[in-house]
Length: 337
Ligand code: 5RP
Image (cartoon, rainbow, N blue to C red; front, side):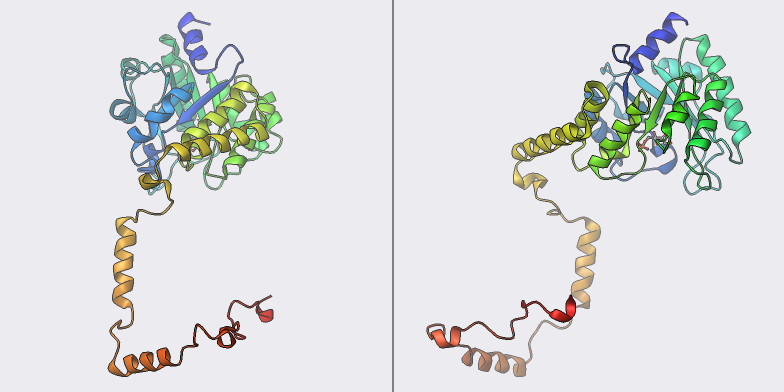
């Protein structure tokens, strides 16, 4: 293997333990402003030093990542469809090799859509990209993206991963699944696992642990890190599983400890109280609700009624009248059981 290619691969998969923690922030390339990734710069800054590499598009790299970083970049070079378009699988190569080199990419990433309408196009593109990237010693990460109608079982993922490896991909990204070992065994290049949709933190740690136990070199995780309420604590815990062989209990304890420390450090007024700050949408909703509320101003009749109720109020000093209300609505209602 060429020295440059070997060196770049070593930046992504650490040779000391053959493990990798990649942080994925490339979602906007087809999803637009994904929830909690609306401002990539803010999301990336505190996480950058905790990952081994960052997977992103050139637009986000140029606008939202400090160029002084020593974190390696895995540059997504495919695209062409969006979530509201006709077919997500219709992707092409959108970044030239010259631009990738200018951006000092440590690896190039592109998706292949095995079994989809544009399977041929994406697989041929992968072959071409590998040929081109190898001329410059740059490794290629193939993302085995799945269409809506395709399952994510070991049979399908083994096929997709193997197809990618046969085209010369140096690393393959896929999903964790039942019998994941089979996917790994039949793929001659390292496999890295995508995090997938946001799930509870402990479950994402379990997924990481299972993936590594099943033979993956690590995870390329996005939403389960930056959609967490505590992204830094989450990435540190995931990293401990990937690089320090923590089990799920140890990692989750570490996460809880970090969250507790974080909340001690963060002053209450600065958003430590959940849901304190209302969004514009919430405020408008509140206004609207108030407008729909029945008239607040009391009529003369209602005021007189209130006065007479006050007069009938039990005497606070009379213990007899202070007896608990027999019709107390807090009493358990047997019918509700
Ligand atoms: C999108 C991608 C993402 O990078 C990948 O899915 C990882 O992110 P997440 O952990 O959120 O699934 O390749 O096509």
